[in-house]
Image 1 (tube, rainbow, N blue to C red):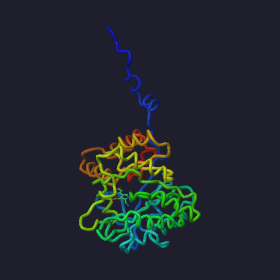
Image 2: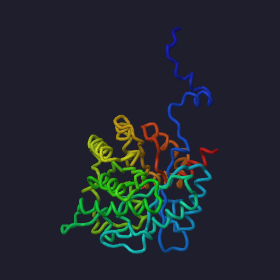
Image 3: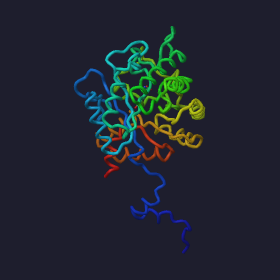
Image 4: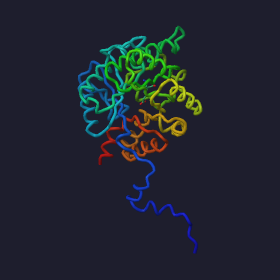
Length: 327
Ligand code: PBG
């Protein structure tokens, strides 16, 4: 009787063997928690399409970040919901705007023990819901928008952000922000570029979380990437690295694992992936119906994003995953 030469199952026999030969590991160090902070509310507001996620008050945000620190999560990324929105999104660079105030609170709360990131865009701050200023035809004016991003980046840095993360997909945004930060003396502020960000239907629940409706039922297909294109993602990523991005991101994650793998092959800067609101919501909805084990599927999602090549993951599962990883 002949035996196959290779018997890979030998290495799967016990949990200890499997642990020893695991090619990919997911650690609490790989997690970034996205958090929403809303101006002018007294109680945290649940987000119906994101069970377990809330719009925070200043106080509840502090408490959440403190809990995340206790679990060992190294970083958070903030999104703000202002009381007043206008055509250009001026609350995004108001020194007393909701995210700037929250950044100061959190720096006071955690010192340098956590990395404080701020999403940099104006869609949460504009009354039309687009990621930039509109021209006379109602489309987003790329170069006029760069000036707004530059102001917001400096405001975030001044409020204490370690990392500013431009998510608007304007051409030249990283160079514009780097220049403005350097001119203002913020040479140490890190730029995490949402470099390959697709025009995805998976952002639906996020838009509930930030109270954004795009005017006239519009979309972001004129500036975010088209889902069929993977090579174009590499052009975007290389452009952002050339402009001075310290770290780059692919978003969403699971439908774009090929893009993550390709990005990992071509850049050596830290690579992030965003497990977005729709990816989280699908797992929560199925788990609530008893159709799958939400914790197990969630951890498998995160592991697969690491296996594709991402160094760290922005995920609404951060707190739960940290609890599971801490055992
Ligand atoms: C733009 C921004 C969006 C997300 C992160 N930054 C929304 C968009 O581009 O429409 C989506 C994140 C998610 O779905 O979890 N400020």
